[in-house]
Structure formats: structure tokens, C-alpha cells
Image (cartoon, rainbow over all chains, first blue to last red; front, side, top):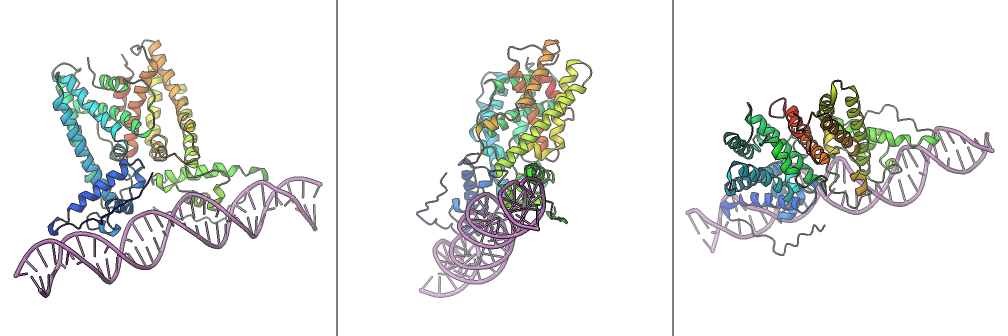
Amino acid sequence: MVTAVTNTEPRRRNRRGEGGKLRDEIIAAALALLDEGGDERAVTLRSVARKAGIAAPSIYPHFADQPSIMLAVVQREMDALTATLREADDNAAGGARARLFAVCNGYLDFAQAHPQRYRIMFGGLWTPSVEDTSITDADLDSLGVEAFTLLVEVLGVCVDEGIAHASDDLYGDAVALWLGLHGLAHQRAVVRKMPGPADVGDRLITALAHLK
Amino acid sequence: MVTAVTNTEPRRRNRRGEGGKLRDEIIAAALALLDEGGDERAVTLRSVARKAGIAAPSIYPHFADQPSIMLAVVQREMDALTATLREADDNAAGGARARLFAVCNGYLDFAQAHPQRYRIMFGGLWTPSVEDTSITDADLDSLGVEAFTLLVEVLGVCVDEGIAHASDDLYGDAVALWLGLHGLAHQRAVVRKMPGPADVGDRLITALAHLK
DNA sequence: CTCTCAGACTTACGGGCGTTAGCTTATGTC
DNA sequence: GACATAAGCTAACGCCCGTAAGTCTGAGAG
């Protein structure tokens, strides 16, 4: 793994009112570091600055500390995940069952395509030790709600159309379904090669959505 | 969180053939650091040495590098988990269904009781970046097999007794069941407060084991 | 053309880390 | 009691980290 930067040009300074642009570049740099295959520890304040082609202290006007960068990355990726799932949902043809599988498989594919991102989104090291940082509990609680809401909705459609067995607690069923997806997604994002049959994803979905 | 060591006595040196004792003390120190609530990063070579009351280089005769300590900790905890599950299984009265719930709930309880341990056992940061360390793939592959085998066995008994719907792939079903358990266990080990209904665990078990 | 200040940069401090090389000391043997 | 050696220590190297203090500079207003 080469960490060389090779910035030929020293990076043009932003225009006067566009200082905020750097914020996005910092997030992009952190994402790039993650995708390069290292673990979360590779994303330090200094390494991000190197990747972005700026000096380390130049980050401070935009982020209070390193966990804040992580939070911003996660927020951006959560939005990206939500968008991906919505698109998968919209493109699904063939009724509620197809929609459910499209959304769930979209989730699993996301985790497999971007394991490092998935790891920091759900279960990153920065979450538990948030004390004495600038991150609030509200920041964390609001993290995946949009994507989860979509799952609840699609599962609800399955119940309404009689494809899935009804239950007195749709929300709870959706939580259980997500937990199953998360178990598989996380495991795929952590180990090199996941043991078990290839259709484990479909089995999880079928069983946890109570499909008929 | 105070990291002070306050070693009043400078620790008595081990007897002549008992140098190996220190190995266990090192593992115990690493475990203690984990349980103190910090994340995995708190377990450094030097911090472990401090906790064990020895000098940092004294670790080298026992472990090649820091990941090796982690591996030893995980191996010990995997054995502890297996023992816990076996005990839960043995103490379960009331047939196959009770045995299955005892084992599964034992698993979930373990994760909730020792979140930091669970995190490094399944999905610790040290696993993906194992290159250029002294850890082999075989070390990692052999990690949870005993506990998983127990799960397969108990699930098989459920099928044999007609409590669970039969399938052509018992192993695959057990993988799916474990993935569901893992999703819940991991989430509980990562976030402070898990949303969703209290009986989510039972729902997962019932659905994924295909209980009648 | 000049001046201002947003948007950066340079330098530096203190601290933790992993690891190497060489030294000390207690323990059990003879 | 002397001595060999296992068990563990001290000192030191180089690296990377987060962060504070002060400095430069170029875009745009007048």
C-alpha cells in the first residue's frame, strides 16, 4: 500500500466565499483513505490532510476533531445508501415481493461493494467512545432512519398485499429483518471469505419477512 | 477514565520454569483493558505491559507482535463462549426447543455482558489487516468452529424431533440463524441502547430456525 | 492601485507507539 | 557459597499523532 500523495500542483486555494468547499474535499479524502483498504485507523487527521493536499491544521476551521470527520463521512454515506435503496426500489418491477428483495439485496450489495464504509457506518470504533468529543447522541440516533423507514414501508406493502404473513408489530418485524441483513452484511464486510451457502441472503429475507 | 496503574508492589518475578505464566497474565491484562470500557485501540503493547506490571519489551518472548496478543485473547474468549453455550445447553430442561433457545440466548447474553470482547471476536479491526503480521489465515478460520458446531447440533435435534421444519441444508440454515443472532448481538455490542421490541431475539430465533 | 481579511500555511511542542540492544537480578543447582 | 541462566528491566531510536501559535498571500472591495 503506497501512501504517496504526488501532488504536482500545490492545490489552488478556494475563492473568497467558497471556503466551505474544502469541507467536502476533506470528507472525500477520508472516504478515499477508507476505500484504499486500510482500516479505520488509517483515517487520521494528518493522513486526511495529506490526502486532501492541505496542511493538517487547515482542517480545524471545518471540523472540531477527528470523530467529526468520521461522523460527516458516515452521514454522507448513509444518504448515499438511502438513495441507492430508493433507486433499487423504484426500478423493481414485479410487485411487492420484488421490491422487498430489491431493497434488501441493494443493502447487502452496498456492504459488499464498500466493506470499509459499511464497517464505520454500523459499528465503527468511533461510536462507542464519543465522550469528550464534539459529537452528540442526537447525531448518532438520527443516522440510519431514512433507509430504515424505507424498509418498513416496503415490508408493509408486502403485508398489505398478502405476500407476507401479517403481524401485530410491523416495526418490530422490520427491525428483526434489518438485524438479519446486518448480520450478513457485517460479516461480509469483516471477513475475507464468508462461509455458508450462496443464497443465505435470500433465506434470511424469506424467513424474517415471513414470506409465504 | 483513569489509566493509572498504582502498582504498589513491583510484581514478583516468576519462578524458574514458570516463565510461561506471564503469557496468561498478559492475556488477562489485555482483557482487563478491554473490559474497562475503552475500545480496541486502548489495547496497545505498552498499555498491556503497564496493566500487567511489566516492561513493554518483556512481552516479546511471549508474543511476536500486538495482533498476536489479540488473537490469543480472542481464542481464549471463543473457548469461554463455547463453554458457556455448552453449559446452557446441558442445563436446559424441556426438550429440543428449550435447548435451542438456551444456546441462542446464551450467545446473545454473552455479547451483551461483554460488548468489547464480542466486538473483537467478530469484526475486530485487527482481522482485516493481518498482512505482515505473524497471524495466519488458518488461525482465523478455526476461530468459532466449536461454538458453531454446537449450534448446528442443537438445530439438528430440533429438526429430528419435528419441532423445526426440515430443510435440505441444515448447515446453511444454521449459518442463517447464526447471522441473525450475530446481527443483534453485534448491534447490542456497538450502540448504547438498541431500538426495537424487547423480544427481537426470540423473533429472530423462531423465524430463522423455522420453528413450528 | 491599494488595502483587507478569508483561507490557507509553517513551525513547533509534547506524547504515545512499536521495537532493538544490552544489562540486571533472582533462582535453583552443584 | 559460587555460578549459570531464566526472567525481566532500562535506555534509546525513529515514527506518527493531535494541536497551538503565529505567518503568509491572493481575491475582491474601494
